[in-house]
Length: 126
Image 1 (cartoon, helix red, strand yellow):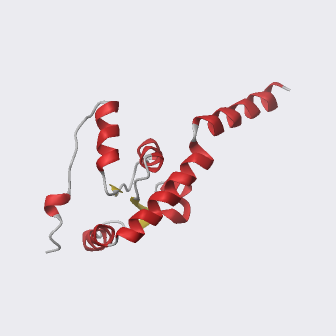
Image 2 (tube, one colour):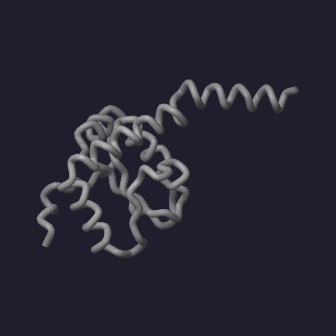
């Protein structure tokens, strides 16, 4: 109905390099999880300036904040509508891309994680 079926790719296992290439080619990422978290995949998408469509109930809002597009569980029509929205709205995609990339740098870069880890070790060992 929405004419987006030929723009969707489903993936099995990919090497890290192949996965990175797919992220860099993607318009957005969909994570409709209801019982498991995809934190590593989401932060990788963010670091590659890829907008994310996700459910709210598995911890993903902690990563995405207000910069993710959230969907209802078990509502494929709503998901399709949000996907079509991103496909058809380049300005929204660009805005989310920039905001998610900046969020990734601010909270999830190696430097930030290393500093937080070091602070935790200092606190525990003192």
